[in-house]
Length: 235
Image 1 (spheres, rainbow, N blue to C red):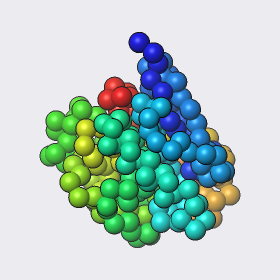
Image 2: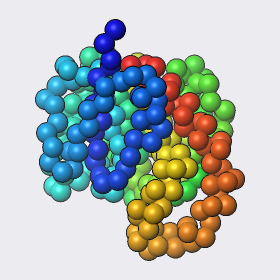
Image 3: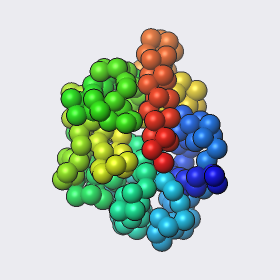
């Protein structure tokens, strides 16, 4: 059987594949990366790929003016789902997916940063990606925005700050607000890479990072890798 072709769309510098990359490598997937935010060309349709991943970014999901590729990306996401091909949107990617399928985006008012607890909904019990996870688990967050669920979406995870933490459209199009791909090595890299921005917006992060990583990291990493592997299995 030929390797599955997976389109990875980067929306920002230095985001990284993290645990999604590890799960794709385990499965022997052929990964094609498009840095859409740098003007690299998105495919016109989903025809030549088996799945797509949309990663996060510092912009918001309505920022078509500064990121004019966004409408084409939304159309591409809808094409993947219409062809019953797996799609995964993380953080900004989930917000873009919500927009693509008719959900309303909220800019600001839902700030989370660091390892935060997420709870599964009752509807996640039989979900093929989230259904085997503990009912509550810590996971890394870094976002200010949120969204209302698209019509017909299955609501899969929640917390107090952002009610809609994960959803599914159809069989295997998943929008996940939290950064389950960000294991401790990737969070360490982000802490170094984005040190200046973090010093301004999260001035106590450098002092609490190691303690929180030790306290929450093992469970978060295990949950994140389980999600990544389960989603890759839907391809």
